[in-house]
Length: 257
Image 1 (cartoon, helix red, strand yellow):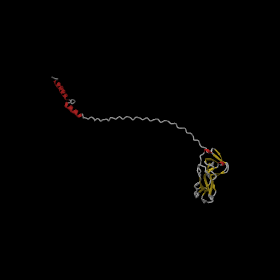
Image 2 (cartoon, rainbow, N blue to C red):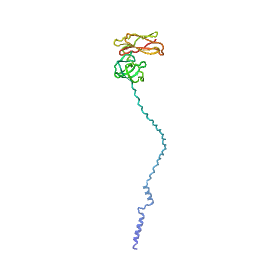
Image 3 (cartoon, helix red, strand yellow):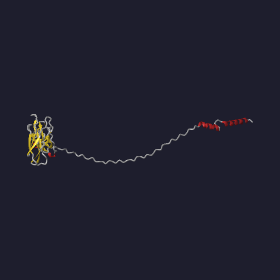
Image 4 (cartoon, rainbow, N blue to C red):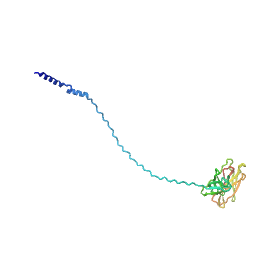
C-alpha cells in the first residue's frame, strides 16, 4: 500500500512523544523537588512580657487658700513737738536748774522745739535751731506753743567725766539736829579750769521730799549745810561733783547721817 510508510512515520512520532523532556518520571520529580525546597526552621516565638497593672496614684485635693483681705494702711500721725521762742536774754544750761554749767547764750527771738521735760522741776529740754546740741532752759524765759505735758521726762546727761581731775576725796556728812553739813577735800584745779563743786541732794523739808541742787563757785569752798527734817517716806540722799569748765567729775555718793 502506498500510504503504509506514512502511517509508520506517524506512529514513530507518537511513540517519541512519550519521552518528551517536559514530562518527568516520579523519581525525577521527587529528586527535583528535594533539590529545590530547603527547610527553613520557623523562628522561635519570643515571649512578650505581660505588663503589670500599676494603679494610678489617687490625686490629693489641695485646699484652696482663704483669701485674706489686706488691711488698709492707716497713716501714723506725726507728732508735733511744742515750740519755743526766747523772750529775753538768758542762759541755756547742761541741767534743769541754775546750778548747772552754762551751755549757751540765748537771745530774744531765738527759736527751738521742746523735746522733753524734767520730773522734779519745770525746766524744758530744748533743741534750739541755732545749736547742734540740746540744753535746758527755764520756762520763764521762753514763750511756748503746744502742750509740754505730752512730752516724756528727759534724763540729765552731764558732760564728762572730766579727764583732768579726780572726784572729791574724803566726803563726809554730819548731822546737828535738822541740819546736815557735807565736807570734802579740795580738788586742786587750775584757776582757769576751776568751776567749784556741784551738789545734787534729796532732802525732807516741811513734810515734802525735795530735789535740791547747789553750786559752789570755787575750789576753796569745801563744805555745804542743808536743812533735812524727819517726816518723809523716802530717805534723804545726795552726791557731790568737782566741776571744771568743760566737764563734771564722776559723782561721789554721800553717806547720809
